[in-house]
Image 1: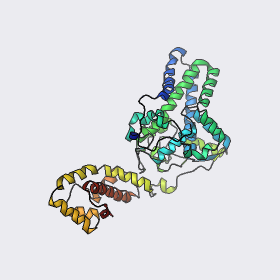
Image 2: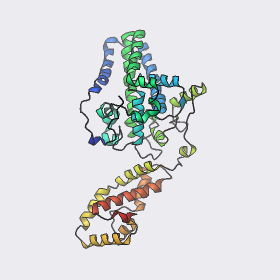
Image 3: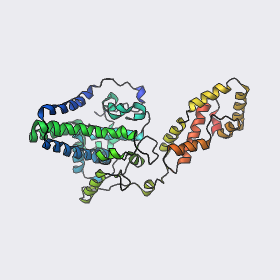
Image 4: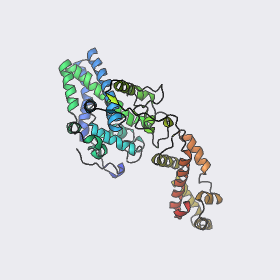
Length: 392
């Protein structure tokens, strides 16, 4: 359970079995829900299921996500263990596995090596298929060294299904088969897909307030049934924030409950986004600029532009003239290309106009535009076998 998985290679370079044996228990949990046809459904069992749903959704948001993945607040060792235990009653593997995969996701969000990106792997795989792929079976504990040093968390990591089995047993002893099927299994399946929707739908549907270099979006509907986790673009803009609903009207019950726990002294050091983030005035980091610029550059299809230019100039005096001009002048590539009247290469203004249309407001827009322009020119140069030095 502790060896390092091969999760840094693009998914296309790693073989995943079409049928995942580890998915069999997951399928069985879904099928058991139909046993309600024989056990019946009671109001008490439904109330139990609703209570367990909200308790465990809170545990995922406050535990798996905001605490173990992002350290957005501090707490004592006892409550840390209780959070981990309650989180694992959802049967979504151990807190160490969950946090390690989530930290990897943020490092490579919506790139080819993201563990779950609808952009690259499709909706179904991003929603749940990735969980059962053999390459994601083990946790890279080096990513969660801050928590793997606790023996009680390592014990939960080794016996990851024990909390869920114990909870299911308690529910059965208190209420019988109806409570087990409706109260425990129905709520478990509901928690599964509510959680998974953040990985899939929250990267497809919603609004983008911030430029984050990925597809994360704010979705009010997802926030309603995940206790605030649906403000996903906010979260990607400032991952360490204990609060994900940045505006007063952005419903975030997980944060409200953590505030109550802070008042009681159970948690402390709640981390909030700085005012520059709330006002969308922060300068973006180099990684975000690079990803956003790549997205912008690709929207112009630079490979098509390069192929068109190659086809238009190959074997003509114009090509030799252009190569000589670019090699000898050592001027900015955009100026040199513009002087040759090549309309298929977008100008800086055209790139800036498109950036303004597809990105939210950001003080780093010029940096993104300049980097995207360079990427387009680099693609053209590589295709035409021109010296890259002239771009500098």
